[in-house]
Structure formats: C-alpha cells, structure tokens
Image (cartoon, rainbow, N blue to C red):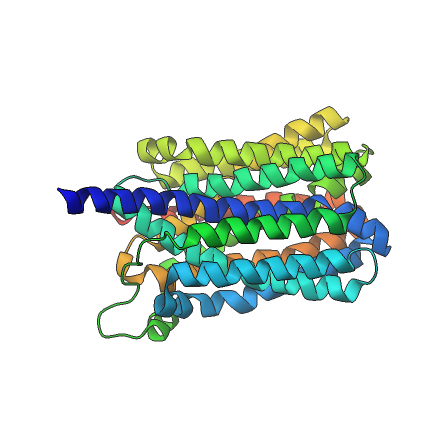
Length: 394
C-alpha cells in the first residue's frame, strides 16, 4: 500500500513538473515574441530582414531536434530539460542585451534560444507521454495547453511592458531568470523515462530507423503544417495587426494574446473531443476553422474582424501539434525516436516560416502573406488520417 501511494505521489509530482516545463517554455518564447515589433523598430529592420533574424531560432531548433531522441534516451528527459532551461535563459539574455544595439548578438542569442527550445521540446514531450501512460488518460493536449497558457501570460505581460515603456532588455532578462529558476526546480521531479527503443537497438539506431517509417514521416508533414500555422501566429500576428490594420502597438500585441488564448482553450478542452470523436475528425474540423479565421484576419474590414479572426485562427491551430506528438508515442518502445523525427520535420515550419512570410511581406504585405498558412492547413486536413490511433485505422 505504501509503495502504491508513493508511486501515485511520484506521478502527481511529475505531472505538475511536466506542466511547469511546458508553461515555462511558452512563457519564455511569448515574452520574446511580444517584443518583436520593438526590436524591429530599434534595429531598423524591414520585413525581409526581420524574417532572417527570426530564422536564427528555427536554425538552432533544427540543429537540436535530430540529436534530441538519442540524447533523451541516454541521459533522460529530466537532465535534458534541466540543461536546456539554463541554455535558454542564457540565449534570451544575450538577445535582450543586443536588442537595442546590434543585430549580431540578437541572432546569436536567438540561435541559443532555438537550440535549447528544440531539445527541451522533445524531452518534455517524451516525459508527457510517460506521464500520460501512467495516468491512463489522454492529457497530452492539456500539457500543450500549459505551454499555451505560458504564452498567454508572456504575451499579456509583454503588452503591459510595452504600454508601460519598460525597456526590452530589462523585461527579457527578468523573464530569463524566472524561467531558469522555476523550471530547473521542477524538472528534478520527473519520473524515469520508459524505454524509448526496441530491445537490442541503440538509441541512435532507433532514431535513424524512425526516419524510414512512412507513417512517422506523414505525421511529421501534418505537424509541419500546424506548426507553420502556430509559428506564423506567434511571429507575425502583432506585426500584421499593427501594419495591416493600423492599430497601436499595445493593441497589436493584444491580437497576439487573443490568438494564444483561443489556442489555450482548444488545447484544454480538446481531450474530451478527441476521446469522443477520434483524432482525425477533430483535427480536420479544426483545420477548416483555422482557414476561416485566417480569411477573417486578412480580409476583415476593421480591427474587430481581425481580433475575431485571430481567435478562430488560434482555435483551429490548437490540437495539431499535440495530436502529432501523441501519435508519435503510440508505441512506447519507439516514442523518443519517433517524437524526435516528427518534431524535426515539424520544426522545418519554424525554419521556413519567418523568411517565407517576411519575403512575401515585402511584396504583398505581411497581412496578405499569411494566406500561405491557410494553404498548409488545407494540406493538413487532407492527410489528417495519418494521426489516427492504430485501433482507429482498422
């Protein structure tokens, strides 16, 4: 009886710690994203140049992601998140210090932030699959809701900092310290990861084998489409609202907060819909909702329409990424390798997204460039059967 109670206590503690890891990651990222317009103005960047600067985050993530499966399998998700939280804090600090002086330290800091975020992302998703199986409930999207809640908090704090004219460096350095202290304290409470590889294979071999699996690759493309929708919302909602709908800076940041709030709601209430209707029907309908929201955001005749569109866009984008992660972890023996592969493909959206929107923005405005997101959500709807549970595919 004592052992059972201890085990339950450990799982509860790990659940809280996993929520904290997701929340901290989202809070750090949105805090940076909320100040992008001010960094752009301070450094005098046009849309194309801003897209290239933002590319540094994706480049760091894409370097880390293929390595993350073997690393998590070898040292565990707890140590991975601990070390990456410290690195993320350092990267955010470097970017903050360079934000008002020179673009080079900003690029270096964002590369470190992206690298840390990529490895952190895989590790906390692997821990989430372990906790989900121990609890016996489908709660993956709620962990991702924790990430979204962190982004809402970061965006709202960012809006307040803009309104109060708090310097970018002071704001982001404090955020970096809070994230490092909060996440490193909780990550030590993770429970040990379950085996991530097939018996008799090395973590590296398992990760490489996952790159040859058609279903895993198709799920990766599915996640890429939703990640593009999510990433474009994170990077460009404020800029598009300010430049395209001519709202003040603080109100442009609130459009970003509306996007994130809707995403958080979708992720929190999503498990009930997924359990009742299945993964494929739910994400297919959400993709269509996202397309409708983008049309409203881009073509709406007033800022009110843009805010409504950002809500639908956020709701439509909410479940794609977590559903893809759950699909990658359907077989617990291969979870680390498959999650790493799916995340690696998905994060290509964060590599291609900023420069694509930025370069198109130079020619057709950032607002019109966001229509590329609608095209990719249409693709996700077409291939959504790839994320069905094995029992649902029969």
